[in-house]
Image 1 (cartoon, helix red, strand yellow):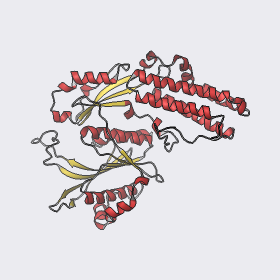
Image 2: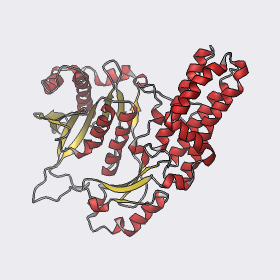
Image 3: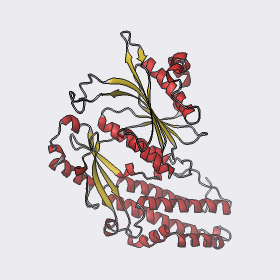
Image 4: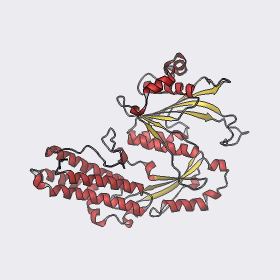
Length: 432
């Protein structure tokens, strides 16, 4: 393998990337977080040293580098991170502007159960104390507790950069030096390193803004989620479905052409506008109807639309309980932000429960009497929400029988679907 004068600088950039992930993994433990941040800052500074050591191998280096030095001098983030190289972000530097907040999420919002705490304290210790002294003794039914989680959110801010979350500041510095190396590769006619990560710790995948998806830090990634039932840390699971991984011949053999049958088309007739993205959403809904008829169940799936010429991001997200449902929506929200999503389609089989004075506030997991099976389709943008409900049941032969659809078409500021709010918030964030 040929050696390039830029290899060492590229290696320092990779070290900063790895250290960024170390800091993210330790986001809720201050010493782990500081270790990652300090390593990242040092690696980025060493990148400039590595470049300068190669000046004899790079013609007219001083002229080229002077332009980038001026850019560094006027960049407020790089200026402060340069100064932080020797300070190496002490605990006091982080404490002044950082925040840590705990809140309850779920079917019921207990505003009184939100509080702030010392950001230098370990979130796991604070959460365990909160559970042992309060959550486990909360005078509500266990069925309600099983549908609640408590969330601990941090936001680390460096004293000298009070307007920036610190990992986002490191990300911006990373991209500055990444662009510098791209420019150096072009200026000195040297190979440009295409892979944005080495090893298997990160896929290095770029979004349509040419930003590493893994370094787009979201609010959801700054949170820890704990169970109200036992105080344990809980996680949800989603699975991205890649088009190349689907065996189309097997799919066609199993489901045939039911997705474009007269019965399927008539069921969805008039429910979707003809323009993008609804034209594509209708096709996915047709396929989902076909799957439900064949399998007698439906795995909840979300489609994130980035643009008319882009293949949507497809995420399957089976969940076992209400806790995981809340967390799954957060994971999807994070994916919307990382992929710069513009529209979202969710398709799921849900239960609809009619509340009245003669029934409990929340149905138990074991008792679903009175609940209706609904084929649920939600079409979401930052401004509009279209929710399509198609009731269905199984006849004595196990065949799926659909009823008349209902459609709710409202602005995202007027809707009442709490479970979709994280997705709406993410779309609004991207649209800004």
